Length: 387
Image (cartoon, rainbow, N blue to C red; front, side):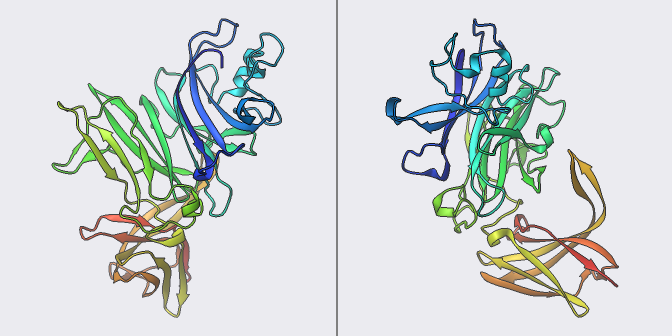
């Protein structure tokens, strides 16, 4: 708007082949001084297309930030001096237009994707960026559009990357209705890549030790560059915005990364083990009591070996303002190979040959490959054993 604007990305929600006002977005960050007494630190911004028959092309851009609810902020020169739009009227106005968790701290490298956490709900832009956490190190923050007029921080306002690490170059995608985020961290003389996803508002790392190479198994040392991440089930008309994902060659999110070897090498990997609404349409699971046992019901998108993970619910606690379950591992139950279609499997409530005692349990159905790797999960359900 007023400074050097770099590293921009844009999307049109629903992947429309036609220009759509109000549904097309761009994100960027600005660096350097404005010479107007505004902030000099890097800030992240977002803007949407608004129909305007008097403007070139029949539209103009309108800034939407963290505190723009009820405000209209066109990016034009029609406002009062200095004539660079409402976002440039003052430092407080600029701060309202930014996405920064803290507008006074450095923020950079935004990336944007569209999606929704709820099948059938309208998709909105989700933005990730790297921001100084106050210690000189960067954390990865996530924000999403709320009410059509402002962004709110996700994950309780906390970064998804570990505290104390310097995380940069994030990317984001949706696999069905699950947002996945990638980033890199400086480690020694190189960089390590990480990927994680949200489950019921809680962020889980898929690569707790960093992105690894398969043969020989080792943590990959990467270049200082974004780890692009996408999936075969992004929010578009072909997937009903992620609610109806078709079976594909890769039924999971996938990413590419470049190693710092000499010569440098480009790799692609699938992210397995997370919620998978392709292998399990809708990610739905039902565990119904039946006599002295239970019946497990779910849909299976392709022929696969399946099994359940059983965890005892010990108690609940609050994390970032949300109530989460405290779990204790009980064990895994193999349920053999099944054909594609509707699953209806009887279970005698035994785990490792021992029957479950009274209490509440969290049951998750999983799909496994021939090497017992977990390809994907259903949403977990709570099952109560009364006696």
